Length: 121
Image (cartoon, rainbow, N blue to C red):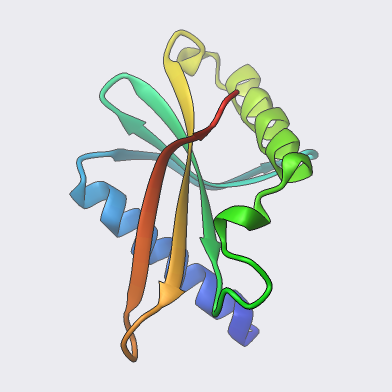
């Protein structure tokens, strides 16, 4: 496993644990289809939450949130739509798109920001 892939998995695990502590439950992780991948799909009360986890070592080339451009948003929307079509039991639930941005903090720790309802579907 490459170092960046290893950091990515570590950051996703960190985000998942953070969301679980906040009361969300896991529907699935790393769900993919021909349109793309959604890092985490969670349930908060009766709302299906599609979560994009973004890690940036620094803000030199822009922050993690800014890296989710219109093209990435469209891919996330199509991927979420595909998930709902393949899992119709979730169709009646409200949905939202959250972003978790993660940056390194102290050695071996991360600074996490959870942006709920980060963009419209």
